[in-house]
Amino acid sequence: MRELGVCPAATDTSFDGLNEGGNGGRICWAVSGSLCGGERQGTHAEKLPGCFVCRFFQRVRAEQGWQRFVLLKPGQKYEPGAY
Image (cartoon, rainbow, N blue to C red; front, side, top):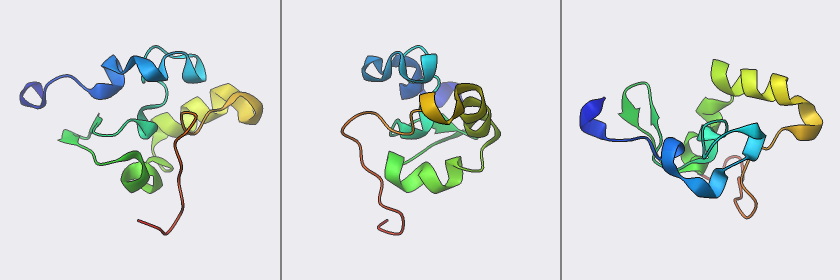
């Protein structure tokens, strides 16, 4: 994956602190263009349905609990079926 460069989830400071993570590390599903499975992903809205079944997504959701879990950064929107 070196040829893909650094994952935006590791460097995007606008996500810092969400789900108690550094940068976008614990909310990677909301970071557009993040790296997953050896490929650069699309926008958060395009990739989110696949992220719902991801073991890491499920682990973060379980660790945070429903009251502390953050699905998207403030201002982001997700409309199922619109993409």
